[in-house]
Length: 338
Image (cartoon, rainbow, N blue to C red; front, top):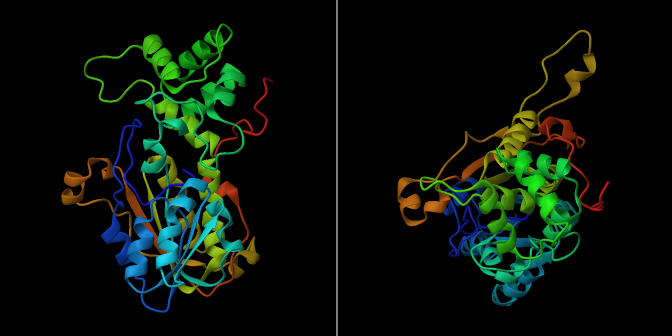
């Protein structure tokens, strides 16, 4: 969440291929042309960036994962000065660019991160319980071993939509007293043993917990919200915002932002100041999903949704996080027991 990439995604952390999701639809909405400057806020393996460069536009590509930046240096050197890589969270994109023609964001974990067992995103292969995209700060192991069961249950329940959140959280709190959780397979196996798995279950019982931990450790929903405000500040009039999400929590944030920014409050004689609030974006159609042809080639693109909007000439509004309806979760920086 937040930062995702123009790559394939896997629901339960299995091996993936670097396939930019909804690439044709992204290019149609972004419409990059010669002489324009676009921001790829989630560089990853560079799928979107390569396509934007091929269209003739310049790209400022951002990623908080140092491995992605290192891997992208060859593409940067081959770009003839048209690509600039920036290691930073995409929520800070407006600190690195000004008045650009387009911003594209692909939210979630990248296939490169999933494929590396040592990064701890996947439980298909054993690795340290890490999950940090920026490779700094509190890890998933810190959260699992230090947070009280009530806090863990809230994280698993909201960010993972896990119906057994309370049971799993209490199991973790009890088990870690004997032995801390340090490895991905240890946590995944403990959850499967505790919850069980019916033959008809399509996904591993630990899938939603791992999703919740990854989103929480990287503050993916907060990053996405801040990135939308940053894009509003960075885009020039007529600039295009294109966001690809992979689950309902992310899509809800994008939908609420575009709805809020493309809707002027109705006039009220009791609050005349509302008349001065004008729209900062024009909605560009509704949500777009993958074609049958794409899901046939890349089944994990099935949950992807693209939303787009076009920037108006109205000055940016202030940041109002209340529009997203996000719950108060424990501070990831305060991962000691409370």
